[in-house]
Image (cartoon, rainbow, N blue to C red; front, top):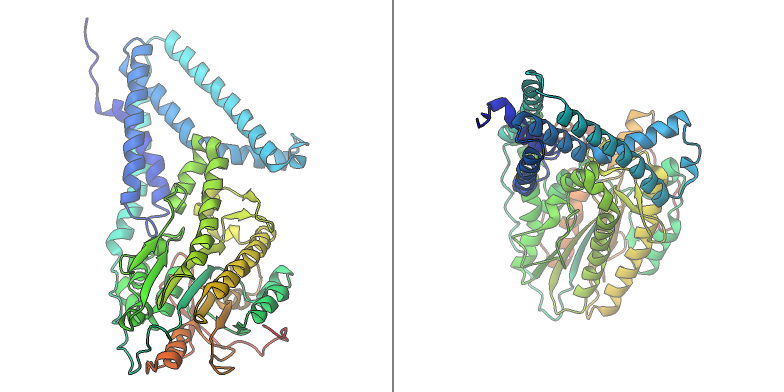
Amino acid sequence: MSVERVGWFDLHPFLWAVQPILFLYARAYKEVSVVKVLAPLGVTLAGAALIWALAYLALGRNIRKSALFTSVLLLLFFSFGRVVDLTGSFFEATGLWPNLGRMQLPTRTVSLQAVVLAVYAIITFALLVRLVLRKPLSERAAPLMAVTAAVLILLSSGQIAVGLLSARPGDPPPAPAPGSVRLSPGLSPDVYIITVDGYARGDVLREFYGFDNTPFLSALGDLGFSTLSRSSANYAWTFLSLASALNMAPLDELAGKTGPESRDQRGAQDMIRNNAVMAFLKGRGYRTIHLASAWAGTRVNPYADEVRADRAHIMDDDFTRALVDSSFLELFNDRLLRDMAMFYLEQFDRLEDTAPEPGPKMVFSHFLLPHHPYIFDRDGAVVQNGSFVDILLYRKAQWRRTDAYVEQLRFLNTRLLESLRAILRSSAVPPVIVLFSDHGPLVVSGDAEALKRARLDNLTAVLLPGAPAGLLPDDVRLINVFPIVLNHYFRAGLTLRPAVRFYSTYSRPYAFEPIGPEPAPRKETEHE
C-alpha cells in the first residue's frame, strides 16, 4: 500500500490556523505584547494538527481531502462570531425577521447563534459528504487554499513588522529632584491618582450627549472636591496623555524619536510606568501601590512597590476580547463578559481596601470606564453593547453609541462616589485625591474644531486638604496639575509648562496638531 506524499501546498491548515490571529494582532500590536500571541498560536496550531489527524483517519487516510476539511473547519471556527453579527445586521436591514428587533438582548443573541450554527452544520455535513463520495480532489484545491492563506498572512505580518521596526521608543525623563521639605510619616497625606478613561467634561456632556452631570459634580463638591470647569488634557490619546501628565512634561522628544508615522505605544507606556510623579513621592518616603487595570499600559508596573490584582482574567486586552468575539468562543461570551465586569468591580474594591493601610502611600488606579466596551447599564447590570471585534477594527464608531456611553458613565458616577466616600472614611489623615480623565470622548460633530476640543476637554476634580481655594486654575492643563500639587505640599520647586495642547488622529498619534485657546467659557453650574 503506497503512502500519500505530503507537499508544501498540503500544509494550508496550519496557515489558516495562524492567519486569523495575525490579522487581529496586526490591529493591536501597538498595545499588546507579541508574547500575548504565542499561546493562541500554539493552541490553534495544535488544534489544527489534531483535527487534521482525525479527519485523515475518517476520510480514508487521504491527505488532501483531510487538509481541505480541516481548513474549512478552521475558517468556520474563527468566523463564527463575526458571521453572527453580520447575520443580525442583515435581518435588521431587510426586515426578514421582524421579531428580532423586539427580542431581549440575550434571546436575540442566542437566536442568531442558533441560526448560524445550523447553517455551519449544513455546510460541514455537505462538505463531508462531498469529500467521501467524490474521488480525487481538483489539483488546484490545495494550491488555492495555501496561496490565499499565505498572501493574507504576509499582509498581516508585513503590517506588524513595519510597525514594530519603525518604533523608536523614547526614554522616560528623569524624576524631579526632591524638594527641601520632607514631611513626617504621621503628617504626610496619602496621594490617590484616579484616572477615568474618556470621561467627558460637564459642558461636553451637556452639549453633545444631552446629559446633565450636575448631580455627580455636586456630590463631589459635597465631599470637598473642586471641579475645574475648563480643564483640558494636553494630548488626545490615553498613552500620550498619561505619559505627559505623570511626567509633568511635553512629549516633543518622544514624538521626535518615535516618528510621526508610527503608532507604537511602547515608549509612552514605559514613561507611564516609570513616571516622575511616582519617583518623586518614592523619594519622599512614600510606598507606591499600582492597581492593575484592563489596559496594557497600566495593567502592571514593575517600578511600583506593589502591584495589586485579585486575579488574572482572559478579557484583559482588545486582542483577546476580539479573538473571543470573532470565533466559536463567542458561545461563551456572556461568561467572559461577566468575568470582565467582575474585574472592573474588583478594581473599585481594591481601591477602597488601600485606605486603612498605613501611609504615606501613593495609590494609582486607572479605570477604563466610561470608555468602551460598554458593559454596564446605569444600575450596574452587565450588558453587551456591540462586538469586541468592531471595537478593535472600528474604534471611532463606538463613540457614536451615545446612549451606551451615558449609561456606563452613570454607573461609574455611582460606584466612584461610593469608593471616594470609603476612602475618606477610612483615611487617618485627609488624603490628596486627583481625579481626572485622560481625554474626552470622540463626539459626533460636523464641526471639526469642536470635535477636537471635546476630545481634549476633560474631567478634573481635586481634593486638596488645607490648600487655598483656587490653587489650581479653572482652565488648568493636565501637564501642570501635579507640579502645582507637589509644589504646594512638598515645595518641589517644579516649573509649570506652557498651556499648549495637541490633537492627533489614531492613525498618526505623534503628528501633533496645536489646538488654540478655548472660546469664551459657557455658563456652568456652581460645582463645574
